[in-house]
Structures are given as structure tokens and as C-alpha cells.
Image 1 (cartoon, helix red, strand yellow):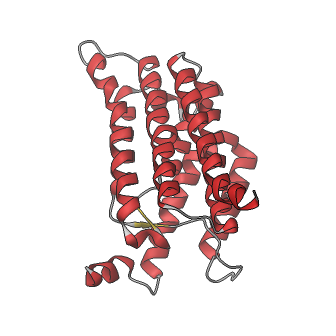
Image 2: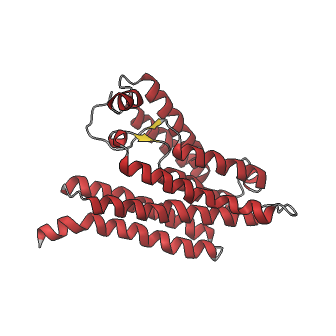
Image 3: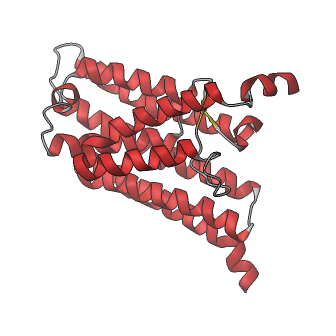
Length: 247
């Protein structure tokens, strides 16, 4: 019995991630974007704990890895795309353009699928990510309805402009598949020097969220990307170079 629980617990948590994503999609299509955003945050929590459970219980399997990617595709690919589509519908509509431009939101699941498929076969991503992780992209999008709801004077005008939203979607899709290492938040030890960038990110994020709440999320994601670039630049390990030599 104990072995069965150990074997299936990570997959059960992954299924909770998937379930949350499905509920979020329904809520998003109904126009309940705040609740749909919270579904993304809940899915992200489940996504974190299924990986943690796998490492703690040492329960790894090919099925678990594929199931995780399929769940992430729904929760962090399709759900944020539906939220962006609804935001585009609520933005200023441009005659003869918006009916077609609004569908640009569904590039998000296309590039998320490419990102996740690549992750499953890319051996370079054991220690670092290559490209922006889909949960980070989804959390960024999940913050938009919350920012709009609080009428943030800095971000709200941009999130109501269809051209800005379209450019933002293209940038986010590009970041998902960009050939640049991104920092993993998995702490494999407590060595401060080896985890200094992770500690900086957590500290900076906590301070910003404390003062600015959900409006801080876009800044945190940008800071995460910048830190990842800095970490890669000053790292002694040339991840991409080593992978090319192996290839």
C-alpha cells in the first residue's frame, strides 16, 4: 500500500494541476477572469508540489513526465491564452482588424506546446531551463486581470491597447522558445554562493509583492529574465556550448 501511494502521489498532484486548469478555462470563457487567474496560481502550486513529491519520494517515471507536460499544456498554455483572448475582446476594438487580431492570443498554446515538447527531449534542461518556463509565462498573464481590476495607472492603459497586447504576446511566445538558459528555482543544496541568484529573486519578489501586490508580477518576471541572463553570462559552465560539443 505504501509503495502504491509513493508511486501515484506525484501523478495525483499533477492531475489536480490539470483539473484546476480545466476549471479555469471554463471560468475564462464565462468572462470570470479573476477566478480564472486564481486557477492558474493554484495550478502553479500543484505543479511545484508534484515535482517536489517526485524528488522526495524518488518516484520518477516516463508517464509522470509526459502527464506533467500535458497538464502544463492545459493550465499554462490553453488557459492563459483564453484569458488573453478575453482581455483582447475587452480592449479597444479596431474596425475590420480586431475580429482577426484577437485570435493572436492562441499563439500562446502553440508556442507553449513547442516549449514543453522540447523540454521533454532536451538533455540540457536538467539543471537549467532553455527558454522561459510555461508556468512563469502563465503567471505573468494571470496577473493581467488582477491589475486591470485594481485599475493600476501604470499598466492598465497598456493592457487596454490591442496593439500593445499583440506585441506583448509575440514577445512572450518568443521567450518561450528562445535559446537562452533560464534559472531553475530548484534548490539542490543550501550553498549561498551557488544559489545567490535564486535568493536575490526570492527577496526581490517578496519585497515587490508586499508593496505592490499583483502589479509587481510583471516586474518580477522581467527581473527573473534579467537575472537568468546575468547568471548565464557569469557562469563557469557554458551550457549551450557543452551541449553542442556533445551533439
